Image 1 (tube, rainbow, N blue to C red):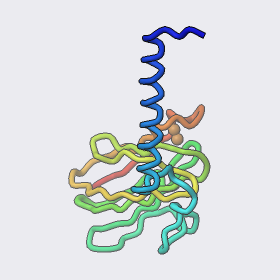
Image 2: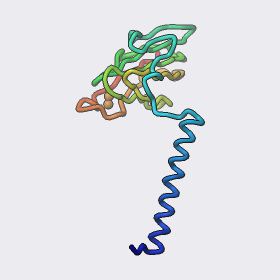
Image 3: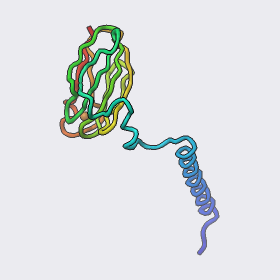
Image 4: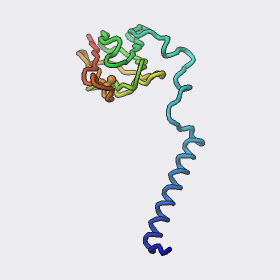
Length: 152
Ligand code: CUA
């Protein structure tokens, strides 16, 4: 079978790239432990995600833990009131499917994943009303899935 010279060249380049990609993936997975999320990442020693009731818990001087459960198509609690300057440690999970968690005007942009906890911290220094938006398409009610944080 005759294969054109340039065809051979492109085949060689393509195969080289494929082999390089697989080597890079293998290297990062085994040498650096990079992998997709899995079940064991869900469980932290101090708490199981399903055992924490949703709510606002004061843990220090103007410091709060906020446990939020997302499910189609709402956040629980749906409205959170905190004082100005509050440092909030979010603990986020989903009861069904993957949802987004985005607060416009802040650096908060995260995901609620079933069976896992997403933890992040944000300090609300500006008073006002903040919207929580689900920015991951999750079905027919997706555009209705909002929450509110009131900083007073
Ligand atoms: Cu929940 Cu989109």
